[in-house]
Amino acid sequence: MQVILKVWSSNSDHNGGCDFALVEVTPDFARLALRRIKVLREQKALDPAVDETYCWDSAALFFSPWAGPVGGTREGEASRLKLEEQLDLLQIDRHEVVTASEDFAVPQSQIGRVECVQMVVREDGIAFTAIPKHTDLCVTSAEIPKEIFERSVTPTNS
Image 1 (tube, rainbow, N blue to C red):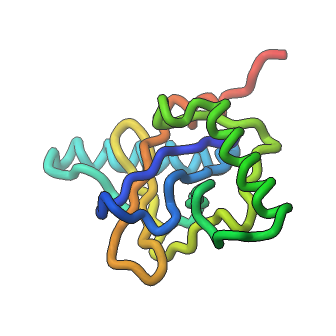
Image 2 (tube, helix red, strand yellow):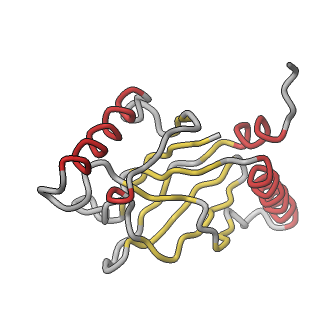
Image 3 (tube, rainbow, N blue to C red):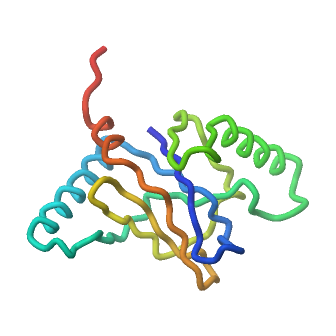
């Protein structure tokens, strides 16, 4: 399952080409996320001041349909427009978290260059944070709810 998350920047005027994040939620990744949520909950039981934990994790692909070089190739412009159209169909502007089909892909030209990507483990879900390259700002994604991970590891009845 592919999950697209809205992203916010610490600078309201600039986001380093990181409007959204794409996360591939495989059963293995879902189990990892659920284990980390469980550990955080155990820590909170011992110390209520614990709020969230951070883990180095590059599972999130930060991107923007509006980033990239201006006046690119026709193919590049067509793929950028296709990405923008797909996001409109998913109504990402009305929701912070949406699932996309397995064939959803982000063109290389629209991927934001980031470093220091971290998974933010919270009591009810997982978010991601990163620093866009050559900036002094931080971007943070919406949170993938715990229920999405639970569905990813639960076998479906066919």
